[in-house]
Image (cartoon, rainbow, N blue to C red; front, side, top):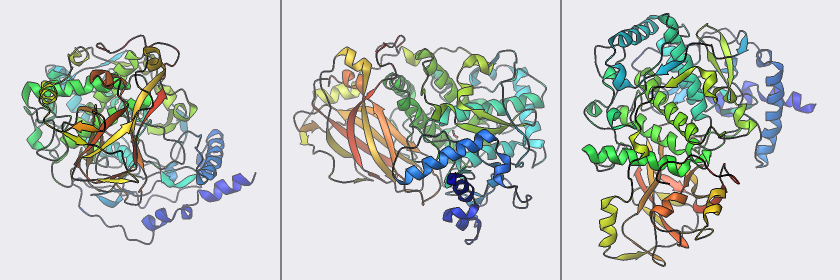
Length: 590
Ligand code: C2O
C-alpha cells in the first residue's frame, strides 16, 4: 500500500507551495480594515496530526481521493466525493478586498465528530418576510435571538460573527481538501452550492431557536420572486434593529425594486422600472425553471469532485443568487458585506436571501416530483462539518438533506405568480423583429479563445440537429455551452447570453432572446486561472423564438462588467434526467 504513505506525506503542509507562501514567507497584509474586529485563531494550540481526527471511513475515502488525484494529473476524470474539511488544518483565508490574512477558522479544531440526525421537532414553517413583519410576537423573538447571538463571547462558536466565519471558511479557501493540499474546499460554483447552504441555514436557525428556547423558530424568507417581496424586506432596513447592517447599497432600500439584470454597472440592468421590472424578473424566474427542469445540472451547477479545482460551473439559480448578493452589497469597493462571500453572512438579510434560494430549490424539487438531481455518490456522499445547537461538531452529507420529511421544516405557501405568467415575446422584441432594418454577417466562433470585455461577442453556432421530435426532446435537452471561461477581473463580473434566429449567415442587430447569465462576486486568488463553464438549456427557448428549424443560431455574449476570455461556444444534446420517461409535472406554458 504505497498509496498510504503517499497520502500521509501529501497532506503535510509543505506539500503546497501556495499554502507555504500564505502561511510563511510572505507577510500577511490586510488591505483594508474590516468593520468588525477579527478574532485571530493564530495562537490556537498546535493541531494534532490530521489522521487522528479522521475516522476510518474518512481515511478510506482519502485514499480513494488520492488515487483520483494521481489520475487527475493525467487529466482523467475524478470519481470521489468532496470530503469534510480537516479542522486542524484550517488556515488563513483570503478575499480580494479584505486581504490574505482573514481569520475565518472556527474556534474548535477537534473533538468527537458525530453523524448528524435531524431533530424531531414539530413541523417548522418558514414564513415570508413581508408576512412576519406583521407578527410582532415573532419579530420580538427573532430580534431577541439575534441580539443574544451577537452578545455571546467572541470565540463562542454560536457567536454571530463566528457563524458568519463558517461561510467565509468554506468559501474563501481556509480549508484545503483532505488529500489535496493545494485544492481548497469551495461550496459555491457548482453542485454543492444548494445542499451546503441548506445545512448552513438549518444549523443557524436551530441555534437561534435554542438561544430563545423555541424549538419551532424559523427564519423568514425574502420572497423576491414574488411581486410582494421584490424590495429589500423592511425587517432589515430599520436601522434601530439588531437585524440591521449598514454595509449595503442603501440606494437600493425600499421602495426600489430588485433587478435580476443588475450588474454594478449603474446604467445597465434590465432597463425596466415599476411593473415592467416586476414582470421582467418574474419571467426570468419562470424561464430559468422551464429551461433547466429537465437536467438538474443546468439549475444547480456542475459536478465538483474531490481534488478538482473550484472552477466556475454555476447553475442558473446560483447566478441569480449572485446577482442578489451584488445588488444588496455596498455599491462601491469593497462591496461588503453581502457583496463578498467572506463577509456576506454578517448581514442578517443573507439568511433570508438563502431561505428563498432554498425555497426555490424546494419548488424545483416539487416540480420534478422529487426525481433525484444527481444520482451519483460523488454528490450524495460529499461531506461537511457544522457545529450544532447542542454544541456538538457534526458531520453531514448531501444525501441527508434531500428528503423534506427528514428536515422537519417547510415553507409557507405563498402565491407564485410567475408560474402562470404569460412571458411570450416581449413587445420590445416583437417590434424590433417587425422593423428589422438591416442584417449583419455573423461569423462562426474563433479560432481560438476570444476576449470579451467591452463589446458584444456574436457567433454563428451550428446545432447538432434541427426539427427534433417531441420524443427526442424528452430524451435529450439542447444545451448551449460556453466553454473555458477565464475571468480576467478581480471585481464582480457578469455577462449575459442571448440567442437569435439567423437568416442564412446573417442576423438582425437585435440580440434576440435572453438565454441566461454568468455572474460572480468579487473573489480571491489570481492564482486560480482555472477555466469555468456555463451551460444553458435552450430546448424551450428555441420553441419560443420559432427556431426549431434553424441549422445555426446566433449567440451573443454581452459583457456587463468585468473581462473574460471565452474558449468556445458550442451546442450539444445532453441526456435529460428523465430519459425514457416523460416529465409528469411541467411548468405551465411548456
Ligand atoms: Cu454562500 Cu449566498 O452565498
